[in-house]
Image 1 (cartoon, rainbow, N blue to C red):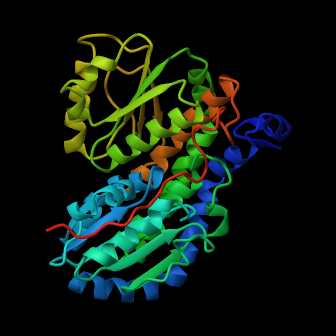
Image 2 (tube, one colour):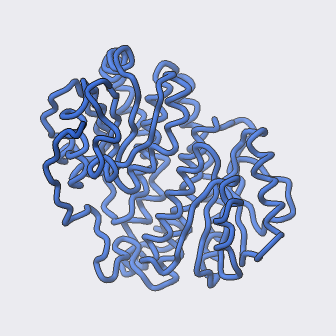
Length: 389
């Protein structure tokens, strides 16, 4: 039996079996997550009805990869609820709680966490309770036994636990990230179950196409001797670019230095990092208006240093001459909503990191050779803080 075209014996010996299974298992995980969500939707809907009636704003939070989920969701939550929505990492909240909470405001705080055992996860919730007028807590986690899921909340709360197989065993989050991101999208579109169900079908078709047609391309790309990688995305896909950059950097133990930016933002200085040792990955929107800006940037990339290689990831083929290879995962009868593109697009970033990790002789399940990073962050002290007027 093979996973991602590689035999299981090889994956086991290479310390890659968990990561391979977690990446390839995402389509089934998404279906299972939707089933869990549908079973809990009545409770979530009742909780959110009260929260939306009282909340002044929405904060989407988490640490590391879990924080990047908010980057992809803040736009859709703002559009759907009309409430100011911000993606704020728990790591920012813990050090500067007064920048985000005060006794005049009632936020809805949506927390994402794989295990919920990172020190900042519970600390952020407790700081919100301490410094807010009132707050509502919606917890999205993959571990029912984690500290966050078991926390005693002093304000109204609702905890949604994803299927057990969403709780990745590998150091780098793959299925846990995409499943929590999908959950956020299901929540944003809570009142349109038919739409959500259709999007999950479309995502499954798209990712299976990636697995069927594009794994050899990504394997060949991982053999190239690039030292840097730049990932670009607009809107919700800027979160995808950010997560893809972290994934490649994590899985290569920092041997590949990665950067993420928006298409328009890259022009304002960051473009200087691109040289002949750089891989550039473009995550394209399927919004024609947005694509006009994205294509302009791609065409402008010929001015200045040329990258070693450029790859685009999009629903349909992108008409431009300045890209070396394309991954097009769309099918005409399975149109993917722009916000949901984030769920399937990130799989390409995960695969690139996975294959590059193997190419460098690392173990994707535990790529950190010297233990600089771990599955659950350790060594963070949480200090008491008082309100400063």
